[in-house]
Structures are given as C-alpha cells and as structure tokens.
Amino acid sequence: MMTIDIKNKLLLMVIVSICLTICSCSDDENDSQEIVPPTSTGEFVDSRDGEVYHWVEYDGLQWMTENFRYDILSYANCRNYIDEQDWVDYAPEQHATRNRAKYGMYYTLEGALRACPEGWRLPSDEDWQRLEKAMGMSPNDASRYDWRGCNVKSMVSTKDRTTHLQLLLGGYITYHVYTNLRNGCRFKGAWGFYWTSTKDPEKKGDFYIYRKVAYNRDEVCRQSMEPVNQLLSVRYVRDAR
Image: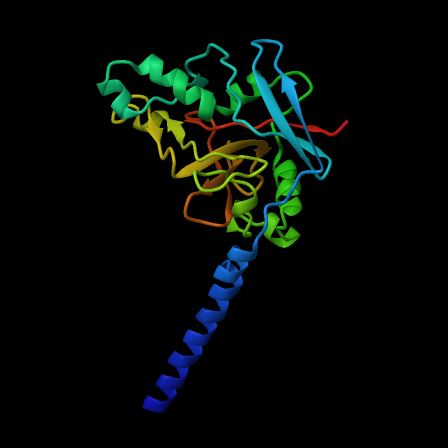
C-alpha cells in the first residue's frame, strides 16, 4: 500500500510539473524574447484639442502608442488619475495634469466610445487578438480567457524597458471604492487595464472584454467586467491605409 501511495504521489508531481511547464513562460524563453518591430509608424493630431498621438502598425492595424487623453467633460465617464498623496498636498488638479500627460484619461466604456476621434475606433477583442498574434502569441492562446501567452516584453513599457507599443501600467479607477480612495484610483504602476468594444459572449448580463497587463507577469490577461463603474485606459486603432 505504501509503495502504491508513493508512486501515485510521484505521478501527481510529474503531471503538475508538466502542466506548469506548458502553461507558463520559461526563464530562457523570457530572456530570448525580442521586441517585435512595427511594419510602419506615424503620427495623428486630434483636431479637437491639438494633442499629438503616435501610432505603430502591426498586421494591418495602426495602434496609438499613447494612452488617449481627450477630456469629454463628463466627470462620470472620463476622469484624471489623482494619487492619494496629491490630495494631501492640496494640489490635486496640478497633479492631475501631470498624470494625464503620462497615463492619459480614464474612461468608462461609454466614455471611451464617445471620446474616439474620427477615423479611429475602440479596438474589438478581435483587434487585440490580431495584435497579440502579431507579437507571437499562438491562435489557441489568443482566444483563451485569463492569463495567456508570453508577450508582455513586446507590448509594455516600464522604467527598464521601452517598446514600440508602449502600453503603460496605469491602473484603473472604480467608483466601488470611491469613499475609501478619494477618487477610486487603484494599482498605478502595477497593472494596466484597456477596454475593448466587445461584449463577452460567455457571460450573462452586461460584461465587456478588456486586457490586463502586470509588472510581474509575462502573460496578457483577457477577461471581462461590467462597464458602468469602471474607468480604464484606452488605445484606439484603425485599419492601415
């Protein structure tokens, strides 16, 4: 009986080890991963406020390389990120301008659709999957939920790394914690959250797919949330001309 139990434990350990190997990026794979260059680059000027955005092209799609920062003048659907310390310093609007230049504005899904400049669109889940596959993610991984692929090094810019796409870890704003965090700001510098325009077909109710990236993970998360009380970062996309 003892021999059988030991064999079963050893078998379980082997299975777990294989699963971890398949489902995660190895250190060697991370070290050898190169940043994927775009096929073309350019810039776009938003005629509404004169703001300049750069773009990079991957698989026939042109992606903005800065978080969008157009103010639609709707406090419920468009917000600046203000740190807790900024409130203590009694200069929230000054700090909001600083944060806006780097991290852009934060939008509800409705706000993201309203802020979109002419000729661009809020990317669909399919657009994001095309981008992820252009970065080297497998089609099977791209269509899965939760954390998948090993593509962050080609997508996210940090203090130690610059990418062409320059996704930022801007956190998000939620009204669910408004009373505890002044304006509901969470996870700046740790996670980045980006809207898609696609409703989640796997869930009942009003849930929309988003992308999440993290400072300590090499995968990209594909998940969904209710759009009303959450304000995320936005990158617009358009078909290459």
